[in-house]
Length: 210
Image 1 (cartoon, rainbow, N blue to C red):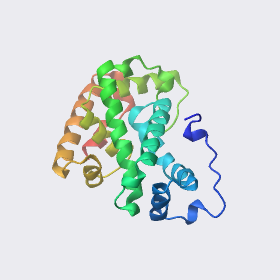
Image 2 (cartoon, rainbow, N blue to C red):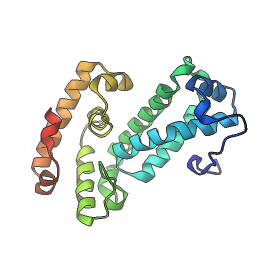
Image 3 (cartoon, helix red, strand yellow):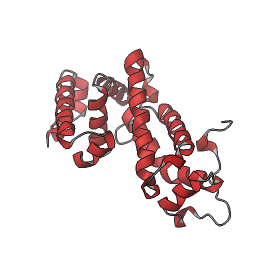
């Protein structure tokens, strides 16, 4: 595409008020290639995908790239959605698929260890403090040591505040598997963080055990 989707104007065509369009109507519009439906879909779901990707990957630029890929796939495959009223879940599934692919790529090239601290995002706020950025870089480096499944489970639980029951269908796992994966992830992270005085002082890992 000649323009990034995030740079495309979000003004809607006449008669297509995004607030008045249901997910069902939006999915039907996408399936028939309506231009207004593309705009409204981006407007409605892009913030969700960008926030999920940024918190999970720790990089705003990577989150934006992933969002582009997610929505291009959503638009291309909209006519395969068998339950149009479940458009949100449809978009979310592409986001999770994209995150899995990106985490696989990171594992292969050990990419995160070379990432500049300025590219990392705080768990709760953007920090301009050099020491805080360094702590975040080290924290995301620890996340990168987890398996793909453990990292996604941990990210969705602790960074997205999803429940275990919500995570299971999103990742296609059983509730018991999600619980085991979360226990494994939090135990490893707690151990690694305890070995880093700076991270141990900044992060309270006890809440992960609640």
